[in-house]
Image 1 (tube, rainbow, N blue to C red):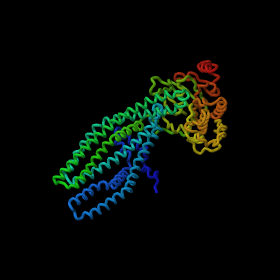
Image 2: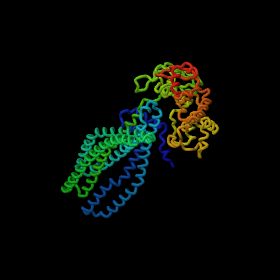
Image 3: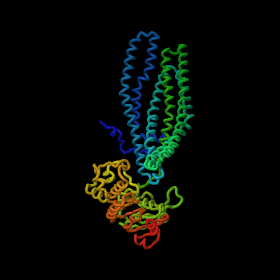
Amino acid sequence: MATFRDKMQPPKGMEPEYWFTEAYRRYRGRPLLTLVKLYKGNFHKFMLSVLFFFIKHACVWVLPIVTANIINDITTGNPDTVRNLVFYTVLMVTLIAINVPMNYLYTDYKSQATRYAETGLRKALIRKLQELSIAYHVETRSGKLQSKIMRDVEAVEGLSTQLFLSILNIALNIGVALAVTVTKSLVVFVFFLVTTPIAAITMVSFRSIMRKRNAEFRKEMEETSARVMEMVELIPVTRAHALEEEEVQKMSGQLFTVAEKGYKLDLIQALFGSVGWAIFQIFQIVCLAFTGYLAFRGNILAGDITLYQSYFATIVNQVSAIITLVPTIAKGIESVNSIGEVLLSEDIERNEGKRAVDSVEGHFSFQNVHFRYHDNEKDVLNGLDLDVKQGETIALVGESGAGKSTIINMVIGFYLAEGGTLLMDGQDLREIDLRSYRKYLAVVPQTSILFSGTIRENITYGCEGVTDEQLDEVIRAANLKDLIDSLPKGLDTNVGEHGGKLSGGQRQRISIARALIRNPKVIVLDEATSALDSISEKLIQEAINNLTKNRTTFIVAHRLSTIRDADKIAVISEGKCVEYGTYEELMEKQGAFYQLKKLQS
């Protein structure tokens, strides 16, 4: 028997995350057409679900006819009334009995199609987030992205259900009711048709304001999601400084803003629904009076009043359902557009078609490199010239904002030179597939980044086939041996969310071990020993000195005492390298580095 995962497998050559992104690009600005294309390869499941819906609802459509016929048989004295009663009873019981299996099949096929699209959209967003540039992630709050992946995709799934199933089902209900009515009385059929333009006018009159209110509410929800994430991350700082009340007050303002937008949306939705309901209830009463008059005149039988009233109620309820769906549809269309903000973003790291590297030696040459951030008016790197030979350990020092972090981000490939050239082994980083280059790179950031999992999983992240001997060597080099031996589960100890169960120094040592186990050709250490105590720092520094031999290493250092053993020190000021040499050479020169060292003495 096929599992759910088997049923969800896409047709051959139609991986959803790729097709969904392409659908957004191809039908940019047309959200409904985009939505339809998301279900490529699943339309047959929708058709089957509609078929099963038609069968399962047959009892509802047949009941008014049966009821009218029974009343007519009784009022006209039909001699076959008892036989007809038995037939109608068996018919209705049979139709009711098949409702259960038909409803199961209807839900099965409907859910397969909608959940396929839901999963595919989330996969497309996740893949796109992995492709977007670091600059994009720096400028976009993570809470907003989380809202798009969870809330907006859920809203799109709801829109899909409403458009492809609810509206099709509504159309079937109205179609059956009108088909039966036109065969019984053309006059009543024409009366039914009069209600349709009124429904259309009601919906169109509210469409613009509904779209506006949904857009406002969605944006405030994204902003709130981002702020809540920030608040949760800052709770230790907030608590440490007794700022709980200030944080509550700050969040209260945002929550009231969301509530106000939601309040306005609720009011317009309520007004929209109530106006539509009132109009159609009035017409239902008019229908009762109209068909009653026709029966009084002898144009229709008395039992037909019940039939027409039931079918008119069906039409009224279905058109009312369309009106009720409009807020959901408006919300879903807004979410389709919201997801498009990510999938259509062009701020991506483009590697396709570029030359892959199969080896890295580690020679870097910055040649008159210029770079500035999007929101800056001046260059962060302003004609930087720096040559780093293979296997050298280079320490970057200087005041905050001088450009040190930008340099290492360019070494990693997060940012590319906007002027000048950065060469790696003689190759311009702008012309190579950075993914292939980063396989030879290891990074230890200033703030250790761990994920929920075990110590072993955090150290071996991204590495396969790591032997126990390799792992033990790295553990000793990173000064983790004593820590792991002291834990009941050793390497299989869970570190908690963001490594919250460990101290800052322990987290940083795990980050160092993660970098070392990759056996990289290029190492980037962004103040990697800043979170360690003096004893651990000394041991780690010795290990780093041993392990960086014959590997090109970039170190960003604020504590100048930690870089005495570096091969070269580059003093960065206003985006340029103003001094370059060994520790002893720069101290003898008594220039910029000497002044920095003197300030830390």
